[in-house]
Image (cartoon, rainbow, N blue to C red; front, side, top):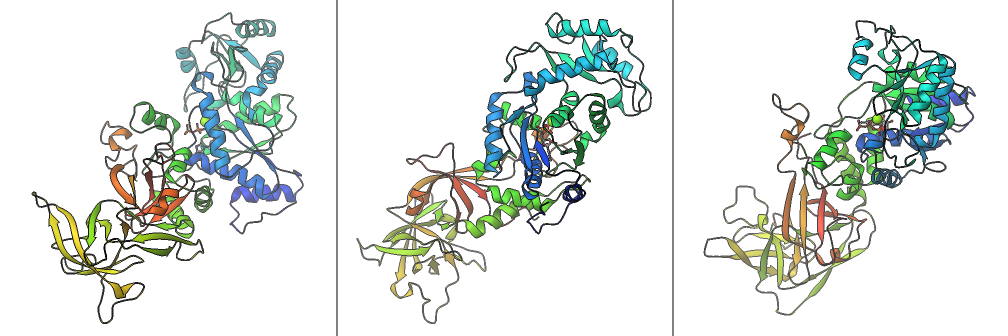
Amino acid sequence: MSKPESTTPAHFLRQIVQADLDAGKHARIVTRFPPEPNGYLHIGHAKSICLNFGLAGEFGGDCHLRFDDTNPTKEEQEYIDAIKQDVEWLGFEWSGAVRHASDYFEQLHAWAIELIKAGKAYVCELTPEQAREYRGSLTEPGKNSPFRERSVEDNLDQFARMTSGEFADGAKVLRAKIDMAAPNINLRDPIIYRIRHAHHHQTGDTWCVYPSYDFTHGQSDAIEGITHSICTLEFEDHRPLYEWFLDNLPVPCKPRQYEFARLNLNYTVTSKRKLKQLVDEGHVDGWDDPRMSTISAFRRRGYTPAAIREFCERIGVTRSDGVVDMGVLEFCIRDDLDANAPRAMCVLRPLKVVISNYPEGQVENLELPRHPKQDMGVRVLPFSREIYIDRDDFMIDPPKGYKRLEPGGEVRLRGSYVIRADEAITDADGNIVELRCSYDPDTLGKNPEGRKVKGVIHWVPGADSVECEVRLYDRLFKTANPDKGEEGGSFLDNINPESLVVLSGCRAEPSLAQASLDERFQFEREGYFCLDSKDSSAARPVFNRTVTLRDSWGG
Ligand code: ATP
Ligand code: MG
């Protein structure tokens, strides 16, 4: 019986698993991650993935990937492929083949017939409106359906005809016969099969009746020998039904369901329906738009799997709902990138600087460390007469305490010389188009004697720097709780109009021409960046800002 390797605190599910192993209840635990392939995975799913795969990993068990695919009209192969990619990218490996609830349709159908034979299921022909009326409410018991007392033979015949395609969608349903007066509404004769003449991405046109989620989930768990079936709190009220099916069917084992609080993150939405709406209505550039809360968006934006896993660990697993601050996720990303991302320089708003006293045609190849703490080698920056600095690093009339360049003032160029601003060249409209500076040849790697240089700014070489586009991403929503809009408004009204700022004509240091898609960089003084996997090319590199250097949201 292995103990968790990590020193991380034992949240309640770790404790339960540990206790079950200690008590010999299971020799080996089996968990599962059961996404419905009706959209891309988001950060909430990452929490569930880290939990399910994490527990199996820590305790030497198995975790299955099972597509919960009982709703063919909303599901697609594209989503299946994306989900598999996301789980693998997060660093997890499922045990055995990818599984599907649809793999068990034959068995589930046979079990439905068993229930009918045992007098525990019946075909009901109430319309959806009537069914709602018969269901009762939280305070009122329901009423028995007039079809509840059909004979076993009649039910078997009706269900066979439902299955063979004789009836239209919604004409009849198969319901479990439990208790219309049960205080838990989920037990008031829930639907277990419905008619849906729809092509299924896995089973094709084999079926025109499909089992409900509740009739599928627990039985699939049982078929797979799942020991701990972990889901979010909204399924707590379904647990009695989950157990009713396991108690009333000849299943091979009885898994137990445990619930935990779902992850809610402020400044974003974590609902596949809303994320899909953002995509379908063109508010974002696809499911992997770097502003989305999907795993594929995080990947494109430059978040690392390790940082996402650390975030999921840090927020913990509890049974009380809450909202996690986006700043916590951003902190984890920064923390990882600060330690592991090589440094580079990129000028976002280039201003040409001519160093008048630097010899024409001379080039010095300056070597700068790629990381201040880790040994990642060096990068080479050719220094010559023409360079670029950022427009924002020069001001003609700066405020007090300005530490950058001003007329007659001095500044150090990172890893290079101290320069002095001699003259600003302006165009007809008074815009500064070029700066004339002079450098002090005695200041390479040391400070000028007896002079104080206020600041250090970043720069890139004039000739060899790489022209690129930079996309500055910010939070997609401008309010912490996007769902709480103005009176009558929707989350769409709270989209942050500055969530994407595109800068073209930026200039990156030459070493960045060799950047690969899986690298992230700290652009000094600007934040962390990576190449955009969709739009970047050698001819026109595009960098995404992964995260700023500091929390600018005051969190
Ligand atoms: P959504 O609410 O976004 O539509 P869902 O719950 O319908 O999500 P599923 O594909 O059914 O999505 O979810 C797969 C697993 O991920 C389930 O076990 C579910 O409980 C879990 N999960 C979904 N959202 C979250 C979340 N925000 N936090 C933690 N776990 C989640
Ligand atoms: Mg779901």
